Image (tube, rainbow, N blue to C red; front, top):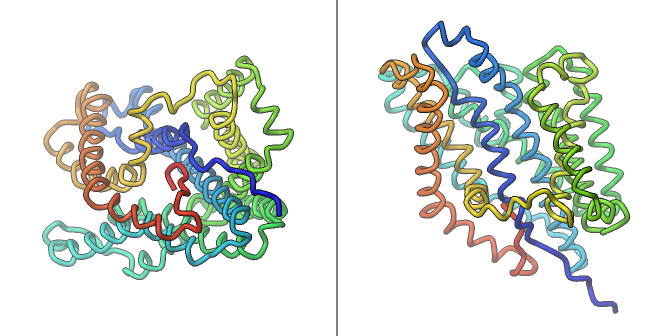
Length: 380
C-alpha cells in the first residue's frame, strides 16, 4: 500500500484576506450623515453607492469557505479513505453556532423585555433564525426589521450549503468537478430567471451556489497540483499585477460595469474567478507582489472575521442612532473619518473579547472531531 502524500492544511496568507473581505462589507455600512449638503456631494454618493458592492466581500467569503472545507474533505479522504459528514457538521457547528445563537437568542430576549420601550418593530419568527432560513424569509418578506439580525442571512446561506456539501463530499466526491460545474450553471440560470427580483437575486442561496462551486473547483485544482497550479506558481509579477489591477478596476467601477442584464447575471461568476485566483496566487505563487501573511496584524484580524462581521451589525444598530441624534454626522471629518473609526474600534474591542473568552475555548473542542487531530485550516 502506497504512503499517502502529505498535504498542506494551513494557508497562512488567507487569514488576512478574510479581514479584507469583512472590511469591504464594513465600508458599505459605516458611512452615513444627517447633513443634506454632505449627502448631495459626489464623495458621499460614491462612498454610499458601495453598499451594493459590499456584497463582494461576502462573495469572497463563500468562495473561500468552500475552498477550505473542500480541501479538508479531500485531505480526509486521502488520509482515511472516507469522509464523515457527522464530524464535519459538528466542526462547523462549533465554529459558527455559539456566537450566532448567543446573538440571536440574546436579541430576541432583549426585544421581549425592552422592545416596546425602544420602539422596535416586529421581528421575523424565531424559528426563521433557529432553522437558518432567514435569507429565504427575507426574499419573501423583506428586510425591514432589526438591522443586526439582517446580517445573519449570509450565515443561513452558509449553513444550507454545509448540509448539501456534506452529502456531496460523502457520496459524490469522485464527481466533485462535475457537481461544482453544475452548481455554477444552476446559479447562472437562477440569476437569469430572477433578474428583476432584487431580494431573490441578492439573498437566495441558489444565487450564490456558483461561488461555492468555484471554491470547490479551486480546492480540487490545488489538491491535485496539476498543470494549472504549476502555471499559477510560475506567473511573473507583471501578469499578477495586471490581474489584480483588473479586479480593482471592476470593483471600483462596479456600478459602471455591472448594470446590464448580462453582466448582472454573470457578475458572481466573474468575481468568483478572480477570488479563486487570489486564493491560489496567495497560497502558491512564487512571484507574488506581496504575501498578505507577512502582515501579522491583518492576519490576526482575519481570525476575528466572524466576530467582526456579527458585532459590527450590533454596533451599527446601537451606536448609529446616537451618533445621528448627537450631531456627530454633520461634518465631513465625522462622516468619513470619526464615525467609521469609532464603529470599527468598538467592533474590534467586542470581537476580541468575544473571541478570547467565549469563541476560542469552544473552537478548541473541534480538535476532537477531526479524523486526524493535527488538522488545521485557515479560518475554518
